[in-house]
Image 1: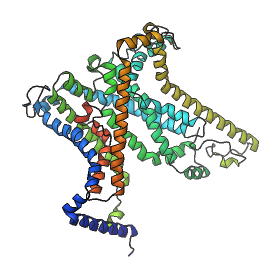
Image 2: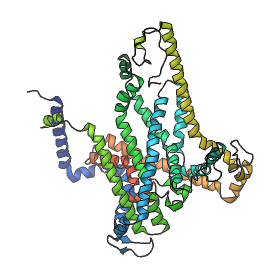
Image 3: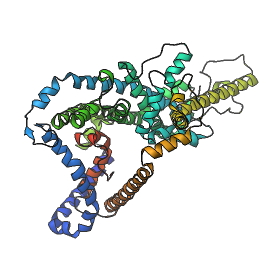
Image 4: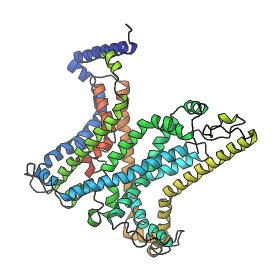
Length: 328
Length: 175
């Protein structure tokens, strides 16, 4: 019978941790009081979180079961807000828009980011400048850039339509047609976050040991094979990270449609996203109860995606049966 | 065409070690021909790389440039056809219009005050908490730091929570 050294190490760790826990429990209230400076030092985070994080979350759960215009009395309304939500076509339109924009932006964005990272990873000059240039959009206020995108994608005489006219192609009503609006918003998202994702991919590429490439080359692997068999698998956790962050960002898309189209979501609400609809209901219609219900519906949708992402992440690192045996 | 380590023209090598070849055997080529081929492919690769990067840089920088151009042009010039892509001469007029319509100076001062306060307070509270977690042992340390870390790692996700999505960045602590 062979003894698994990691299992032994794990069990010693655990017993040490157990004794530490016992020790700290034994100290009890005295221990808590003796450590008051430490508690004071970490208190600001918890205080701020309680006031600006926890309280609004709890309060919005309460609000979602009420009818409140923000000033008058709060009337309890049971689950009627949620009942209305399920058959609200405007809400489902917003859900659909959010997902379309999310796919239109995330897929090209991550692909472009990977290409840019790949190119930036070569031995080239001015690397620092290129990196800053690609990252610059991410630190810019989207509100300021809305002016730019508004003029570039303007229906009548925007830059894009001028270019199309010059090429004798029919112009596209970018901000007044259903697909035009979605594409414009997606372009704004792509412009802003491609550089950010490229920098993350670049960090991932740099962490891959170059010996792997060299040995693959010696073995006669082509560039494509190297990319598909070495780079992509080793970048997998990083790709998943960017997918998760862009999922979260895509589901809570708000700034871009709001600054481009205003609170109404554009023509036929084609640019109405879930968060924009929530904002619209709560802060322009002053229906805080319904706004909170939308927020929690979004929370449920986001949770589903979080679980999917989490399953994808933990798939590879799942314990093999051998490990489980060692733990027994 | 390009690999991650860069297609540097490698000094004389046997054809079968050529990184750019797809493993196919090419016996009829002489050594110098093969070398020239490698150098050519490496140069082409670098050219493609640079072209791709510069194209991307132009796309990501252009909105900033366009913002500058717009600040020096009149509305008619911006939306005219063909659009004028170079700097105009109306910057002075635009600036005086801006200064007369809103109090931009005090808005800037407000921005500076808020961002400075924000940065200083975040640094202060964060380093205080981080130092405590790193240097001291106290009951509940692991659990507290875990919750702190959880909160920060899912801060993006919390955006989709009701509270913060309607008032972005409400937690000034930034922790």
